[in-house]
Structure formats: structure tokens, C-alpha cells
Length: 139
Image (tube, rainbow, N blue to C red; front, side, top):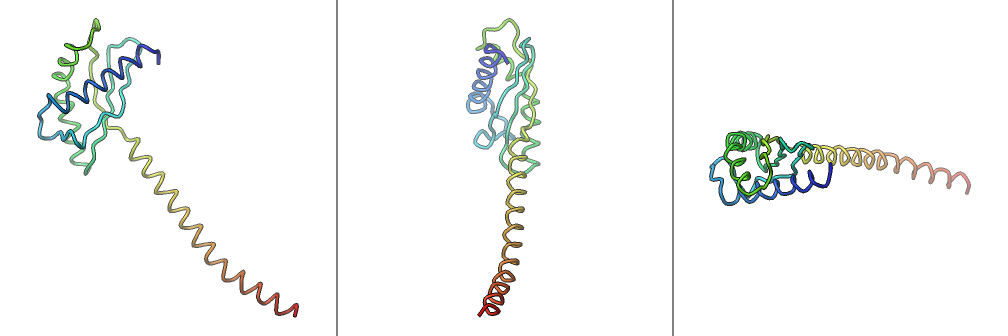
């Protein structure tokens, strides 16, 4: 990404965040539980892929995503009034799965750590009894 596309994506991210708090009044979108994680803008600045994260159950997440997709034209119009670009990027809202993947990875790591601790706990009593037997033989 060039410096310009990074600036534009950051501006779009901030603008959409503000619009969610102030201008968008869809009951399916809870601004307290919906966040714009990042925005990807290609070099031509004609499109913008907006990644969102919604706290809550999957049904609530899907509803919020649908609401944002439905309101994308209105959001794009509001952004176009504030952005000084020749063309306002066409917005595409996408659910950000990074958080879910991170949680799943952490869960797998925790399971592996638990299994290791169980194996070590199972091996320790045997090792201690062998050591005691070895000490008794030496005496």
C-alpha cells in the first residue's frame, strides 16, 4: 500500500466509525457493539473493502452486516461529501474473521497446554515412585 491509499483507508475507517455513532440509525446496528477494524483500498481508489467486527451471536452479526450492506450507498454518499476525491470509493462491507481465528488459535493452544500438564502429572507419580525404588535399592 502506498502512503496515499493508507491515508484514504484510515480516513474512510474514521468517517464510517463516526457515521455509525451519529448518522446511521438502523436498529440492527448497535454502534456500541459494531466496530470498523480496517479498510482496504486499492491503488485506483475506486473501491473500499470495509472489515467490521460485531460482538454478539452469529445471527446478530449477520443482521448488522446486512444492514451495513443495505446502507452502503447512503454511507458512501455521506463520505463523498467529506472526502475530496474525484470518485468516492464504492464500499463493500465484509465480516472480519481475524478475531474469531485468534480466539480459536488461543483455544487450541490452551487445550495443548492442558494436555501437556495432564501428561506431566501422569508421568510425575511414576517417576517419583521409580526414584524412591531406586533410592531404596541403593541403601
